[in-house]
Image (cartoon, rainbow, N blue to C red; front, side, top):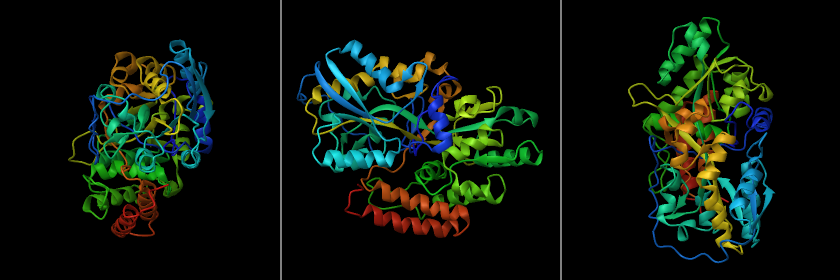
Length: 467
């Protein structure tokens, strides 16, 4: 939502400025799902699909033809629009495949609804589309996307960072090819911590204590800002606290909710305590990514939870940033005291999907495979600051040297949202509406989780399929 907007953001100082500025002004694309490198770990309730080395031959011509690619804006900088740059790079290798770009809505839900309507109506275009990481179950259940694992062997899927393929799967088939990733990070004021001789917090309790110290010293107005509004972004944030507390949203088969638990109440209670202690403003219950970002980047908060774009947004004047690189630090998310560090970061990002009605699936696959190649993944990382999805590019020293965010991606620990059910939209609504009510103080954390449990079970038992 991240593109929950939450969508893209920069790798170099000048990168993705238009998008960051737009995000701060209007909201991010929906905070989608995320995952990590070989040195990271991912917790998930879904098992990896049993992808096979024996696959079918796709219909069409793999080296010629025309395809239409639907994709939301990613970034634009001096190199140009990311999507156009990728198409041009592809055409240098495959000059006989003509790719036409269709710009999709920046609002993830609008984009999803539009594609579902078009594809369910039998339209053969777009042939390929960029979609949120939380779409595989919904699109797979309704036959709105091709199961790519029927055509791409196990060796293809092995190149991606752990967790991404499982997150792109539904009922044993992989529907999305990972394109680029988002995940949560903790941003902090290095200069303010130094003044009080404090170190970057590794636990939530330490963050709360240090924030209060900085506030009492008169160094900053707010201690910690994050996404607390009643929307998808709050589900993303909540998943981090819940995983840190040892909890989960559902059982492994997505048939029963597990939100009425001690871990869920602990996570919600702590989030509420951030407000009652004064560390977080009460208005956080209305904050999406842009509002939290604006407070931090103008120097009014000591700590920020946000996505990978936030570093550049903090120090880029064109994006509204009033801080400098010497003032802004970034670390993996904290966890609760007594738990292994770091804490969990929620997974967001975007996959590539194929329309089942496409007339040239072979060419579609050629394009998708190119976007997972070192050439394309390096363009995304080096020129646009996106987190690569392939291990080779993501773990390279060149990628780590690009900016502080990419330097620590391999140290993070990731948790997905419970999107393995086609009823995920209703499940997420049950989470964020009730957590938001607890944050606002209109109900207790325990009552909120009891209500969330009931609503989540209703969502999971629905036969509507989520679309």
